[in-house]
Image (tube, rainbow, N blue to C red; front, side, top):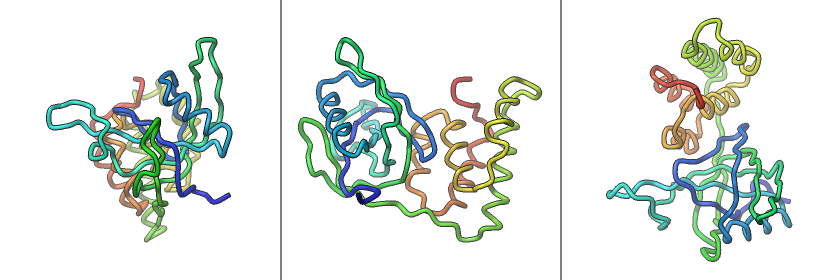
Length: 207
């Protein structure tokens, strides 16, 4: 099986995305997405979340022009059906992709896609940036707090710059629109520099 796939079913959501190495909980209730979920479960268990842009009138619109072109292949790690036909699932982010067209629009969208490469130009610089990113994220938390202790346990041991960029970006940038640029960046150093520019004023998601 080719990975990432050349076509993938897509759920369109406002202010929602996932990065590689992250987990996204979703509730599936619309009939079209129930059908999409059934297809994914019967095949390779891959799907993607496409983030919608706001229109000039501050409205959410599912037109081609309002769909962000960069996304992430997600693997269905868990799916629990409910008595009313809805489902709760956990989507694990895997690889960055760019939508190149649409193989299907109804009843749900299936995108044609291509992988977005991940590159490190200067390994030593990437490691330094990852260290600074972890320190900056840690500094947004109250000292000696349970959140700081959890951070040290969960994120402190991380060393891979690419993983640092993804997990800190997902957990510390609270809005999908803030995270979205990370999906289109190929250089890991660029992702880390972007995070350092954003972590000055943010707090961790859910705080």
